[in-house]
Image 1 (cartoon, rainbow, N blue to C red):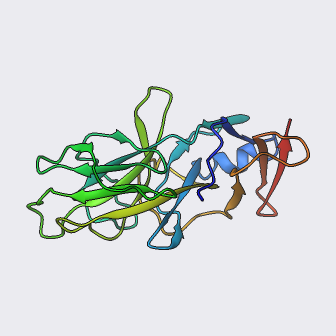
Image 2 (image 1 turned 180 degrees about the vertical axis):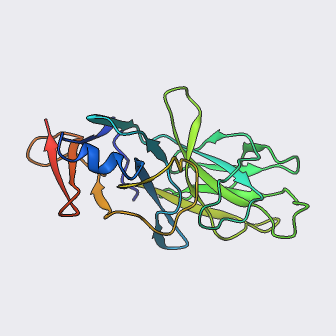
Length: 223
């Protein structure tokens, strides 16, 4: 039996104090945030979801609403992924197809109750590398921001399943890298699980602050 994902809005607030701001600014750092997906049985963080300029407080908010797209780009570290299809919302427990035109359509396939599913890929890409699936999380405008690109291509007539997760990571690094594939980080990563609310407070909010000299994060629950 699948476990439904709570629809509640999640929030991460990253704070910078007056001592750490000039140290982070001197490196042209920005805040980078990534979300995870289970693909081929492995938990993967591989695409920068958000890049935010430094400020005393940065809020990252989202609801667990996900969608599919695709690309013919071959993912590699530092490559910015370009979506080439139409974003199609797909909830966990639903299936969509890719038509021969490259558009996403409804699917007659039996969905996997625990996954977002490509029922069948009917698109024959000109690129011999084929196409790769992108997963995005819905933004405030109603479109989707990429959080994952599958390193493996999906063959013609194939099916694929993915499980978006509510674990996120964040760190500081120079420049804006939103929508970019990554494999390394300039500073220590902090990770948090938003699969459920904090047991003691029932809060979906966390606050995190980085100590530049110690190279450590401190993350607490916000009410």
